[in-house]
Image 1 (cartoon, rainbow over the protein chains, first blue to last red):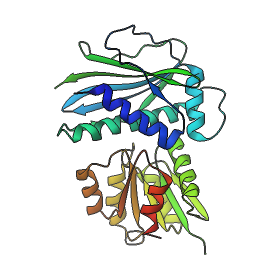
Image 2: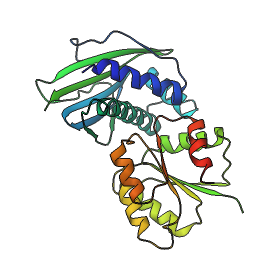
Image 3: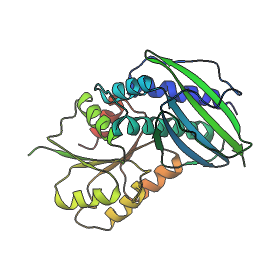
Image 4: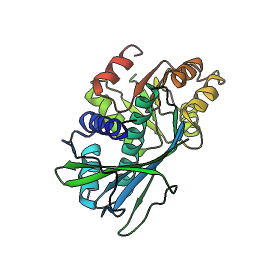
Length: 152
Length: 123
């Protein structure tokens, strides 16, 4: 189903057209630690021909850098603007995934994104789901896009 | 008299980005109004003279499609052109939006050039 390829293409398109940051995708990880060492996460649900949760997880400085570039302003703390910007990126990545799957006649619907921030949190998802984590590099460091999915 | 655009999106970030993209596209609106969902948009349209609306689809409270339906039923505002600007640009959704009067659609992520190309025909 090429989840990683679709997510990477979608993310690269968003970063080049609306964030204006150089981003480099690393090798997808199908297994790995659950704690990615991040301080802000935007998540969005997808339903339809498969059920999935897509999340963008950023350390604080990376979240500030990406959001600041997107808004064209300097940001110094994880505030409503940062949460909103990362939620919108999650929404667009999920939208890109939906569009790419629709070309294969796989129908998906998007929920409304939500964002959480803090020094220690966990995000639960359906058990026994498949998991892929893609690391991305930007000037400020690494962030991760994760998808957990079940075929329905 | 200068032109006015209404940007409808539940994301404050996206409203700022659309405003910036309009400037980058060289489209000068004298007034940029904002609304966070379809219900707010109806209120803004009822109180202001608006030349064009750029609306998201996937919003809480009142979605972009629900907004289009409600707008089409109000004689005072039904002729104001609306362009959808959304991640939701599948043919089925866009066809439905056009059936309620939408004049076009811009897919997120978008470029200023795409905004210029789409809005240019309406202004």
